[in-house]
Length: 275
Image 1 (cartoon, rainbow, N blue to C red):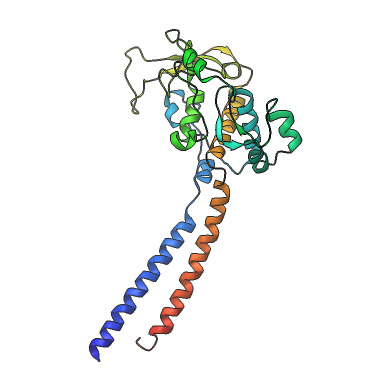
Image 2 (spheres, rainbow, N blue to C red):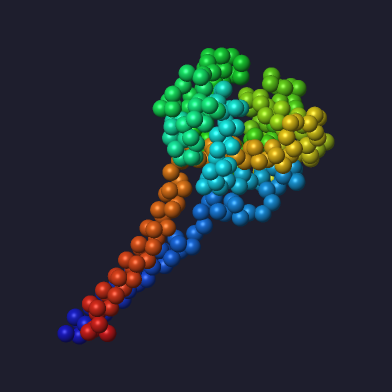
């Protein structure tokens, strides 16, 4: 009889620990902040210190539909000529971003394309390999493979380099085949490196500062917004359901909390005579 009670007490303590562990995990998940919220809460993005460009943050908020609409327009005007989004249809984009069919046909779909088509570039692959040394890649999953911050840094760190075929280079990707296609917006800038050369803490070429060679159509603040909207759009394309997924996660955590509470009450009912 004593052995039986000891065994039952041990089982009761074990069950209690399991329930408490589940409750702790559920509570911890509820307190987690989404990546978008963390990015939005971060302080300065580092633009004022060009030498620390690796610390620049995209600050994406994929739930911001106004930003996504601007980003979609940016992509269609400056990127789709070379880069495709082979997993995204025009009609899916319009539905998710609250873009009317009229606006879609008037401003975003190229002549001859249909809303049911995927967003594909008409740039010939063979010509891309001749002109740039490689065909421009599809950007559907670029933010998932490289990260939003990397894409943001890449688009903001082009500089003049007369030794390259494109007459430009990039700090984030040395020897990038892509030319500085946004220079008409950002302006042309030169990278000034320390006299002794060397690398920074991240293993990249140490940068002393940027020097503006010629101005662009946008102010630095406007260009930062342009790039952030574009990267935000690419982040959405990489996972169109991420906002819904994060919203669903809250309900799952709440369910786990309620389920844990019922499990705890059930445990008390089963073991009330033992205790």
